[in-house]
Image 1: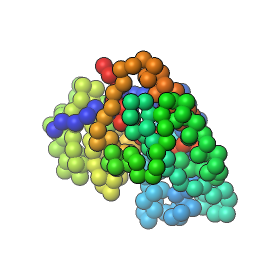
Image 2: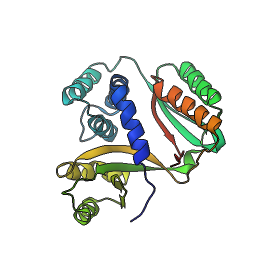
Image 3: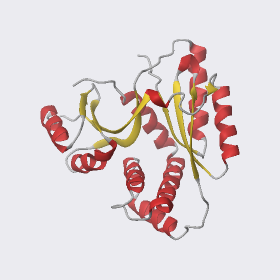
Image 4: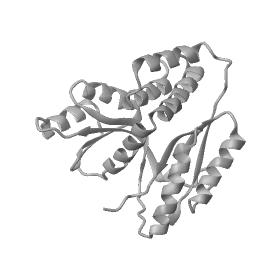
Amino acid sequence: MAGHSKFANIRHKKERSDSKRSKIFTKIGREISVAVKQGGPNLDTNSRLRDAVAKAKANNMPNDNIERGIKKAAGEINDVNYESITYEGYGPNGIAVLVETLTDNRNRTAANVRAAFTKGGGNMGQVGSVDFLFKKIGHIAIEKSEKMEEDELMMFAIESGAEDFITQKEGFEIITSPSLFEKVLEKLKDKYNILYAEITMQPLTYVSLENPDDIKKWGKMLDLLEDDDDVQNVYHNYEQGN
C-alpha cells in the first residue's frame, strides 16, 4: 500500500516535545482534566479520556502523572472549566490550518490565535472554511529495525483492524479509524516499538512553499500557535520540500 509520508512532521513534533516536554505534559494534563469532567474517570466508558491517555502515553508521560491527573480532575468537578474551541484559517500560500484549543478565556485565546495568523502572513477563516480538507484518523508510526519483517507487521496490523499500512524509508505508518485506534495500538505495542501514536487529522490535499519569506512566516505562525498554552493541537496541510 502507498501513502503520504508524515515522518518529517513526526520528527518535528518529537523534537519539540523533547525540548518542551513540561509544556506538552501541561497541555495533555488539561485534556485529561476536561475529559474526566465531561465523561467521568472511567476509561471503559469515557472515549475522550481514553484518547487523552493514549496521547499521554505516546508522549512518554509517566503513568503516575496520568493517574494523578485523573484523580485530581475527578475531585475538582467545580474547579476551572475549560471550553473547547476550534479555529480555522489559512497560512501563506493557502496552507489550511485547524487550531484546537481548551480555554477558560475565549477572548484571550481568540486574540492570540488571530495574532499568530496575522504575524505569520495568514488569515482567520469562518467555521467550516477548512475542516472539510481533513479526515479524522488514528495514526501509528513504527520505526524500522533489522529484525522486523515488513509482511508480518503488515498482516498483523490489518488483522488487528488497521485500514491502511504505509511503507516509508524511515519506518511504517498504520492508519486506523478513530473507533479502532485503541484496539490496534494495544495489540501493536505488545510486539513493536511505537514511535508515535495519536488520533489526528489527516490532510486530503497538501500545499508546499518555495518562497523563503513564506517559509519564514509559516515557521513563525506555527511557533506562535504551538507555544500558546491554550492551544492543544495544530493541524495543517503543509508539505515540507526535500
